[in-house]
Length: 444
Ligand SMILES: Cc1ncc(COP(=O)(O)O)c(C=O)c1O
Image 1 (cartoon, rainbow, N blue to C red):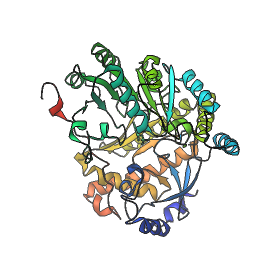
Image 2 (cartoon, rainbow, N blue to C red):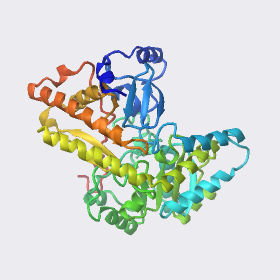
Image 3 (cartoon, rainbow, N blue to C red):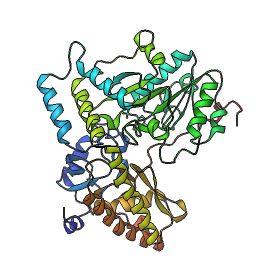
Image 4 (cartoon, helix red, strand yellow):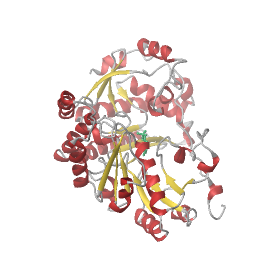
């Protein structure tokens, strides 16, 4: 990819994307199957909307424009697009069949692999989506404890029990939403205010972008267990990425149940529920968690190849190394350019660029940076989701693009003209979490 070719590319010309968008209008509600991939996350009138293909860390949109992708399908592509070892495993399995009338040996093989690399994965079950396994974990916890309430922290999927704590909860009956409350990360007081003798489980993303403060995860586990409550780690983002054994390995804390998806099969739809055998065993009879495609073999073949590749090539170390260069590189640029109102935060392998409201509207600032990055061949919506295919050249290209984009932002911030510098509509927030303070024991 040449720098000039990308800069010369007209910002607003994505005719094929716009044609597909017009065809979807009135046909697909909200246009997208996942908000994070949808039109609201990209500057309308500037960014493309539909991608056609990918290879490594690069994608091509339907108009043939090439970008280095820092979203990587919102997490699944831990190795990269069209990654040979995984695609070969899928092709070989395809020759033999996709889904069968009886069980398939891959169900056993992948479970053995998961047990070998994930701490405390005494038993393993599969499903297709992250929401499937977080919901199964919650049901198991309710069955094991014979309790009803759930406390949560993070995003856990579209199902009733979770989405009731957000502002997109229409359709969830009140008696269901009354059973879930959210607590604040790194804040034991907010946990203790919610735990009571009907709390079945605490489910959380062990780390989103803030590091757990010293002792937080241990204190949370101890408080849960003192209360007879199970601890569930939603490792959708941390699993197979922070370390092969995810956040449990990285932070040295074991949960009762763990949920995985995203990075485990390099883009194929697979989710894994794992954990303590005495809890998981309830799935043998009393807890019903079965689905037609749970043992679908192409995804399991992909998972087997992906986990082996992640393990043998020490991929989590690579993601951390490249991701550190991105996060620290961004922060060095912001410092050098005198822009204290923006920084990259989060883990090495996955960081997020944030903008302070003190300098203007954060969504407009993000939109301007996005607009300028797209013009320089970088697909970006605030994240640095690294894959094994992000080369040194990709990272160097992105940092060079950041320098130019940040200079544009700085000038606009100083002139008070960020909105005017946008050639399209700013990006939107996904949804807001509501804190449910009324459900806390002390009513505060
Ligand atoms: C932490 C976390 N949990 C659960 C989910 C839900 O997964 P899915 O969209 O596969 O249902 C997501 C999805 O982004 C997630 O990030």
